[in-house]
Length: 507
Image (cartoon, rainbow, N blue to C red; front, side):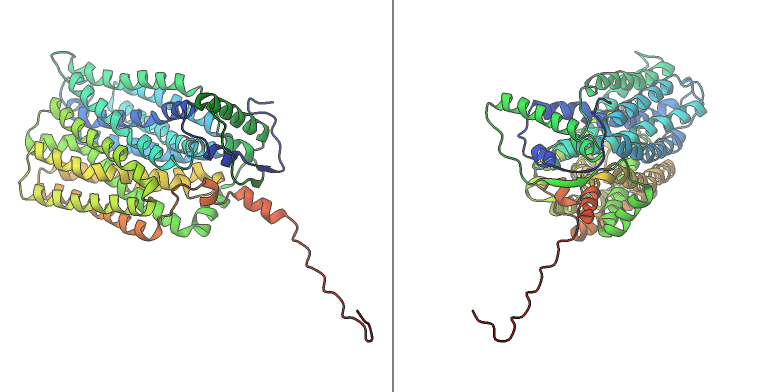
């Protein structure tokens, strides 16, 4: 017997989803947020450190024979390629073996790869472990988003998911300010400071691992995969804890659900579900991910290079500018997140994508005319990314809630991988070449490409976004196991037709 309880198969009826959704916010939910949400801080730390140390790594005496364009282009693309691969690989394992096992394994992969990046002695070693760092982070996206959406009550799900995804920018701020300290040659030698920057990621990851050990498995995953007794016990324990905390009885849960338990779902059925059963939702997921992936990967990996190339900002000072941008990015989901649960998904997703794209066009026009300085460009980016960050976070929320439970982790992985491969790999490579040319026109072109893709995502959201606010995950997309249970029920017998009375009968 596993820690989840005896595994069984059969048809079961449960109120576990309704019991989870009717819980008030509690210390238990804070534990979930802290234990799982902090991964985005690590991702923001990683991406920002690389962007800000690019110029230092290319300098003589850094310990690596590598150019700035290779760091912001090739190394960035390898990191994203690793993230795409990790999302698909670990996403499949997450749906098959559970959320908890995988969000511990993926964090361990990240820790080892980051530690090995810090001791890089050659460019090929650096590139290799940038790939494996991304591999771990990509796996985190699938496992963590699945667990968060399945554990957080429906009325809070939108804002919590957005704020957690937006916490990437807390890591970005930390990485930006850390790079200023680490790149100060009065404090650390050229070949040591950047290594210490990566080392901090290892330290933070170890702290998160200690907290994450206490985060439970998703009860929704448990009852579908034959651990209904463990799911019922886990939810009952949480209910008692919440009642002790609030001092009152919880209201009765809503509707029950009947499912046919299963161990796993094959790739063919997942693909059929995503593409055939939900084609409009699939188009929506791709549009949102491609737009935000191109914009964000291009900006985060290339902003430091723009400041150095066009405004002669010293490489050791770019972190100050990026910290300001990161603060604006975090404020977007923090201040706008509640509106995704009140005003609704469709107006907020479409609005944030369209508005950020339009503002980016204006920024490109001003940059092309030479009207901006390092400070005013940073201010423009703050305004653009205030809205774009809320929109980008909603992409993860969208694909994690609009597909059936059994395909959730793989759906996140698929759209993240495809969208990020299209925008996240090509974005840094294109952006690095355009900004390295030193021509303002080339950089304007890069801005306009990102703006166009964001506007396209917003227009598609206007028509295809799902009104998921306040709804149970099972109401947004019926689980495949519930569909199977319904299909296996015998059809009700047709009522018999009474025979006509014989001639001459009375009464």
